[in-house]
Image (cartoon, rainbow, N blue to C red; front, side, top):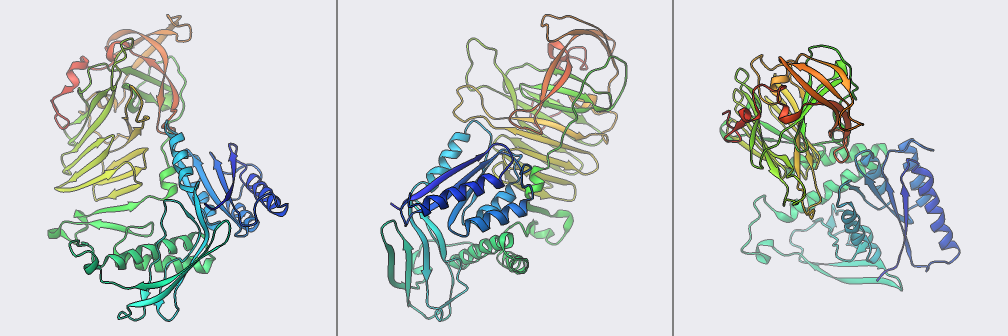
Length: 549
């Protein structure tokens, strides 16, 4: 087992430059003073939860400082916690120093994510692994130098033979172990894939050729991030050319999906893209609110989240109304129904895994069904995946990827394990937030939240638990007085001809921070929103995810 010296640097603040340089100095001093074995190699693991804004804050300067200090003599791994870090910056800095970057999601299983990463890099077998081939035999070889080989990992090198009739050629592998140099010499044989695996067929052509193309594209994308300006330009052009030739979706390309009979018609095309880091970090925000006591009518912002809380926010007037809905798991509620635009949004509730005998059963939204009848669009969003249907074309997206689909009437953007943004042409824009719960939690499970971003194009006939508030509501709050909870005053509210007693409370907006949310003060209407909503809660229960009654 090869010996590596690990040094963990935790930057809970945002000074990244100085701690990493200090770590490099510590390891260099240890080598100089013979504290560690001569053949040992050093590894720095940086843990940070924010962008650099203390000390040296220019990211390009930090990358330059770190690379100059390490000088190729150490390996740097960068772990970014949460969504406030600039992951692209960490990724480039790690690659420049023979390491890699990983995002650690702020969830109940963050410890498992850290353990998984450490298990990958904890057992090092060899360092400075080099594969040597005769120059007159092969060409276009992918990266053949590797800083380290970890136990349980693999190394793949691919290239082209100058002579396709070549059957045997020499190969040499050199590496360094703790005690001595590792040398392996042998003969490599080129064999027919169909002979090796006669019963297996690869549907995309020659497997080994596409493997070579894939590895070459990855090498070029690395050069695009960390090379000189000229190298970056050349690498980008070469990676794009190979991506198009071999039909790989990369950060440089998109994939257009069409039906055979409508191929080439942009009106019937869906485009799949990889989102950039900046797109993924671009999360809509809602302004904070306080409360006033006056009468007004305004177009609000609406959302529903948690167990489930319905929130109607009036940003212009700094006030918010909220209510809960309680019913058994599996109930499907109509949230939006507009017979003129043809849009319907329904949500189905789920419950806890099991009931705590001492607590009330909590329910959350676990599935949403969205219809745009005029465009022929149907969406089913669950905590596992997103199913898309547009005029017979089907697509399936997963929460585990940063992906997008762009069509003439609909744009979808998935921020990995976080949110789905849906824009429907000339109608509405909304966000569905995914709340991930520790999978071994004894009670809770994953659930969804629904947030409208733009609803002003709905007709005056729009209705539903959320839709009825799209064009505003008139209410008056007065006579604030002490309630049962000293921290939550009560008040009188006159709304829709009803005199209600409401309570000042707090709900959460989870779009900016999926884990903790942002506190939003609101006037809470009791008893399933009775008096605020039209009719009673039972009027909004429908028989299916795409039903209106």
